[in-house]
Image 1: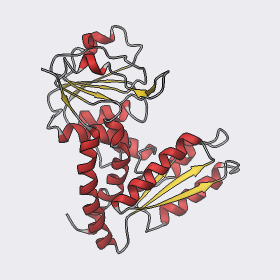
Image 2 (image 1 turned 60 degrees about the vertical axis):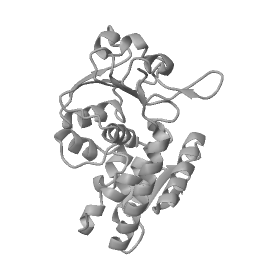
Image 3 (image 1 turned 180 degrees about the horizontal axis):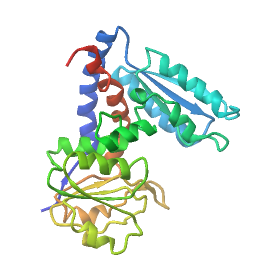
Image 4 (image 1 turned 180 degrees about the vertical axis):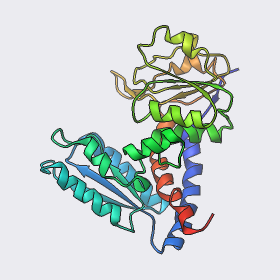
Amino acid sequence: MPAQILDGRALGAVIKEELKARAKRCAEALGWPPGLAIVRVGEEAASGVYIKQLLRVAAEIGVEARLIALESETSDDDTLSEEIYRLNEDAHIQGIIIQMPLPPHLSQQAAANAILSTKDVDGISPRSAGNLFLGLPSLVPSTCAAVIEVLDRAGIDPAGTRAVVVGHSNVVGKPLSFLLLQRNATVTICGRHTRDLGAMTRQADILVSAAGHARLITAEMVKPGAAVIDVGINVKPEGGITGDVDFEAVKEIAGAITPVPGGIGQLTNLMVMKQTVEFHYPQSGSS
């Protein structure tokens, strides 16, 4: 039987309506709309597209998004850090995103260090990573939050399962592995250079690929009935994008699968908004 398709577009529409209601209640409690600051240095084209998407989604939900556009010639790390410190102190800002990558003369680590962990809605700061490692309340990278959201909404409980994560980046593979550990999964982290990768992936009840390698995961590498979450985004030579998973073949084996496009990527912006609203909302004293 073909796999259940975990449709990010349909799920995103449901989550968006829920977040509209959350944002409204949060605004009533705070006295102002929840605020998101997006800090961009320079005019890198891809980040510009992403920022436009964030601004559009924020407006639809009721989050007041503010773009802080700094010149690419911003002279030093102190100048950028001072801007971030100012946003840390701004009561009308509940979330801060620093658009990466920064120009080469600026330190991404210094910028991440400057952001207040309780406003770090993309989970890039060392404090956020440390809290996640220790199992403390933490904001997490939006892609990781999207994966957990999809599993939860599909009724796929990681507890007691074998989860295999292919890819060990600081923004997806590593933090996602800790989130799955917190859900009591037994977690293995692999890379595309793992020897006999298929022997590892065939053990997975939950298989997540975030390696950035087109069609890395074939049907022969998937356990029948497994939940397969494809986080990969790879540009095809003829145009368009494809994931890390051979979708057409794997959907005949898996129990559930996310498509690319139309899967996890549809939810990442919404998870930024969710963390902007929901992480702070309990502080207002409301449920």
